[in-house]
Image (tube, rainbow, N blue to C red):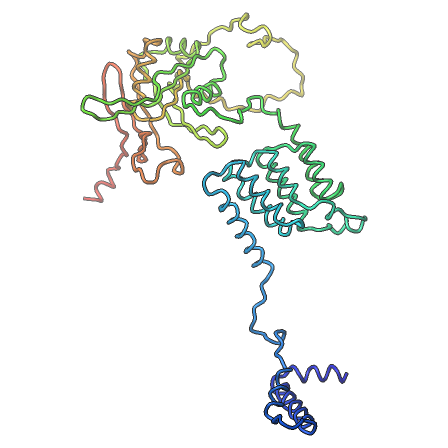
Length: 450
């Protein structure tokens, strides 16, 4: 109790100063009696004061850095490391070089959790977010056989939770980008976290579900999309048509030319597709009924968004519909019509109703880099070579505005010919007219304005 009371008394600045002065005075008086000749009391007093120093533990004005500040500082350091090593080019080789620099800098791998988080954030900039070898290299950054639980109590209390959360985050990023782990990934996880850790459970779940959904899509999209716009348009139109007899026609390839006046003119891309059945439907179309060119309609292929346009007609009235007989030899495996005379039971209920919406026939589709009226007129002119009826049928253009996030902000009039005010209809054929839909004004509102 006496020691505690003395410590509390010393913590007060006034008491501490008084105690120091009293101790100095007593020490000076004691040394004055034994001081040899030739030494003044002032020198002895100064020597005595040298033995007293202030403690930094009593200073309350000094700020202690928190864990969050240290984490943010380390993240900034590792981000600067990536930027400093890869100043010129950001490739897989430079990314691996940064990882090797960190591994060779310290044998204990201090700060490996912060480095892995910073590396996961930088993977998209270096283009290695879908590379399995890079993920295995990041897993190899963890120290081996350090975070493995030794007994059931450590496994129950989530042994080294911060490191396990980092490993799970790495596997989740692999899952988001569709990267399937291999046997090397499993060996690394066992060496780092053991066979009963949370990263191992995440690995087992990925290996269970990924093979089930890998080939579930009957129309898979290639991982590497073609860079040539003609090949990309051919791939998109083939996926939309879903008809093996459809024929893709390249009406115009993207090119540039210099006119006689010295101006450079760029010709847009025009690629169309049409099947023999669509040509037959267009040949039987009534020339008095117009056809419509509508679009653009967006189509997403992974991270790329493209647009396509269709040539369609309105559905026929019920009194003009003619049902054609089915050809029994058209399909031997999947009959198009079944005439089965089955006895019905009293429990059969025919009260449900299905809405059958007739959207009208689609005669052709196309993709172009510029969706204005002049470019689509070239597409219709190219279709007239195999469909002469288009020269007799009036054609109306309905070009709508696309999504706002896909339009250029700085360009008020993008190359697609969009008009956000409403739909634009232009008639071509035997008689050329321009018809713009206008909003009807009610007579009462017009009278009120007067």
